[in-house]
Structure formats: C-alpha cells, structure tokens
Image 1 (cartoon, one colour):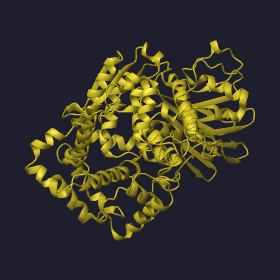
Image 2 (cartoon, one colour):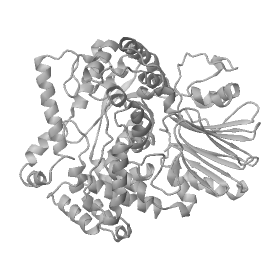
Image 3 (cartoon, rainbow, N blue to C red):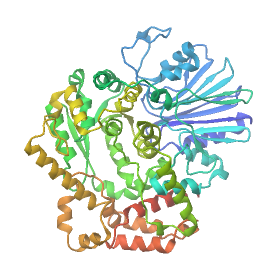
Image 4 (tube, rainbow, N blue to C red):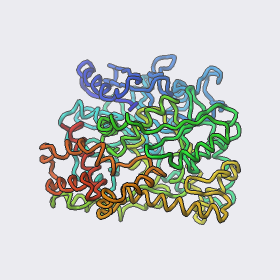
Length: 604
C-alpha cells in the first residue's frame, strides 16, 4: 500500500541504508507505484515513501525554498478548492491537486498546521532550523503508522511487515491480541498482532529532537468534539444539509479522474445531490457478482441514467477464480493480516476500478455515522477450534467487548470501530487507488457530534435528508425498496427484498449445518435463484469449490501443528465437513486460513 517508512537511530545512516531499502521494497506491491528515499546525516534519519503515480502525494519530498524544511506526506488533504489560504504565495501559484503547498502551511503556522489538515493521512516533517522531526497522522488513525521503539532507535512504517523485515527478533505473535482477533475480527487499543509493534494513536503529533528527546503529543482528542454544545433538532438538521453540500465538492476536486462507486443504497446516491456536479462528466460503476445482476446494479443503472452519467458494471469473471488463491494470499500480505481471505474480491474489484479512474469516490461509512449501523460484533467462532490453554485469551477479549465499549456511541464508531474493524478492507482498497468518502470529513464529523440526543437515527430521517438534498434521488427505490413516500406497493417491495436479503444470508454465512447437507444434495436449484440478488461474495460455496484445494493445502500442512492454539483434530474435522457440504464453517475456515497465512508470510 502507498505509505511511508522511517528510521531514526543513533547509528550512522550509511549502516542503515540497506534497511530502508528493504522496508521500501516490502511495500512495492504494484508496478504503478512510485518510490523514493531521503537521508539526512545531520539528524540520523532515513525516510522512504511509496505513492501511486500522479496521486496527491506523488510529489515527494516536498522542500521549501530555503531547503531547511522537508515534508514526506502520505494520503490526501481536502479543502475547498476556492479557499484563499493565507500562505505567502499567491493562490494562483499554488496547486491544491498535490501536497506541495502543505510545506508553506507549516512555514506560517508551525506545528499547528496539522490541525488544519482534513482527510486520512500521515507524514514526517523535518525541521533543520530547529533540529527536530515531526511525526503525525489524521484524527481517526485511518492512515495507520506502525512503530517500534527500540534501544536508541525509532522505526515507523505504514505496513508492519516492513518493520518485521529488518528486525527479525520482532517476528512473534501476541497471543492476547490474537484472542481479540478471533473474538471480534480486529485488535484494539493501538496494539497489533505482533509483539512490540504498536500503532500510532489517531490525532498524534510526536516531536523528536536531535538530543534524543521524544515528546508524544496529541493535537486532537475525541473529547474535542464530544464536549461541544448540543444543538436543537431544527438547527442541527439545517446545518447537516448545509455542511454536506459545502464539503461535497472537495471530494470531486482532483488532478486525476474521479469516478463514483455507486450502489443501490442511499449514501452513494447522495454524492449526486450537488447541482454543480451534474454538469461535469463523472463516470459511475458498480461491482457485480457471477450469478445474476444484484439489486445494487439494477438500481445504480437507473440512477446513472436519470442523471446522464456513464455507468459500468465491474463483474467477477473466471479470471477471479483462476487467481483466487493468489489474491487471497496477497490480501493478507498487503493488509498485514488485518483483512482476511474472504476479502480477496476487494482486491480484485479495486484493480478493475483503477482502470476506470484512479480516484474512487464512495458513500463509505455514511450508514455508520448517520444511522448508527455497525459491523462490529462478536464472531462467536466454535470454541472447540482452540485448545484449552488458548480459551483464556478468547474470554479476556469477550470481556473487553462487553464491558469496555459503548458500541452505540458515535465516538466508538469513529475512533475504534472504523479505524480498527474496517482498516484491513480499506488498506486493500487503497493499495490500488485513491479512496474517498465525504462522510468522514472533519467538518461533517464535528457537526455530527453536536447532534441532539432526541434526534432520531431512523431510516426516515436519512430519507428526508436525501430528499431535501435532491428529491429526484428518491424517485428510484433503494436496493431494499425504500422511497421517501412509502405506498402499499413499495412496502410490499421492501418486505420482498428484505426477505430475499435474509434468505441469501442464510445461504451463505448464516446457513445452519443441517441445511448445508440439503443444499448440497437437494436444494441446488433454489440456491441458484437466491445467490447474487444482494451479495457479490459467496465464500461458503467457493470454499467447497474454487478454493477447496487451497484450503486443504494451508490447513492440512504440517506447519500448522506448531501453532500454540489450534485443536488440530477439530480443525481437520470442520474442513472435511465443510468441503463435503455436510456443515457450514465459513467463519472458522476463513480465520484459520488467514492466521496461518499471517504466520507463513509475515512470521516465517
């Protein structure tokens, strides 16, 4: 994935040159990546960067006129394109399509410049005038920076594997964190699966000085937003519409082609609500499965046609299944194990999307921040999958899940759930293109924290919000049959589509063991009609067919017996039962294969 690597050490930089080169090479996943390095003997620092060609950050290193300030930036910064920044250069001489102007913000504002950045980013700024180095990231920590603090050295990287590649002694799995991973699919509290490697907390501004002094500062804390004065319902709703319209053009502004990743829901169609956007030639596309055109495709085609936008369907094809085992391995490797093999299609689709446009604009996280939707939940893997000694780590994680977190709070969603639970998927997507969503904009999020407690999170409020942005957006029912004005026909349509949605879930992840047998031997025709109406991934079926040999090669390998947590006999039993269609162990097989690939690719 595009990112940065950095070594600050008391060793001469000549001795560390091979290390920084190795870190960079670990992250060169695609041939369209650009890379480079910067070495400063004065401060004993080595920095490398990897960018997507022609992206916002593809201008590294950024150096001021006096050559005493050097910025290495990763990510994007979203401001109003017409904004007249108070930098000492005329606005006409500044391009907001790349990161070069950010160095001038630091010249004028000093360390406070990071408070004005808006987006997902991390960066390192070297100030030779004051012999100091700034390490910073965005408020949510969505552009992750891993770090290791050793004896007389500090190492940062956008990917954990780059640190593991140069420090072999760190290749150890943290079993307590692995317990969290098995309990709810991610690791929390800025920890990682790897001992002694941690994650820079969101909103950090660490300052390292030549004397060796390191100050771990925070330029932003969730309380900064949580402690705002609550608005009344009318004022909040009015500002919600105004703010969304104001920020939306920021996400269409780019030096590269932008395309809208359109679904059948509400959050993506809201991207078409700003009138000025209609006159611009932005293309749209929708991801599709292999069994039939899903409702996302059917609805997105109608929406695109009504707005006069070109629309493409990016389908799964035979090529995906031919490459599925390689895509699964690469998904684990790119994401440092934060995404699993059931996310291999994310890599495939975003490769296709890159061919249409290098910038993908989505409605991601709209349902989480506007409606309180959540995917963060206990996985409830079969406990027999693990040996008795490992059960304690699962239990500790479950306690943390039930006692520590307020899962319904906006703060939890923004600063815990999304940066941790959704990070792996985002990493894989961003390895192929620039990924954008206006729903995590600083201005928009700051306003949401002023929402009155009495304000409803219901679908009706969101429907009204979309209707007020542009009534034409609701002329076409959503993938689940919602419209602003529900008639008897649309209510019946909604119930029908909701039923088909639930049914498809039961034929995939939710299928009971007893039904698996009947599906294999008596319900195949029914399954064909159900699959693909709503979902585009069907790994329960693919594990039995397209991935069967891959699953057996990984889970029946002798190396898996060395792991200190599996119950090998039960693991072999569930693999055989699932592959022969006698049970549904999609969750257990997914996590087992994923963790084994983490060991193979990142540890061993």
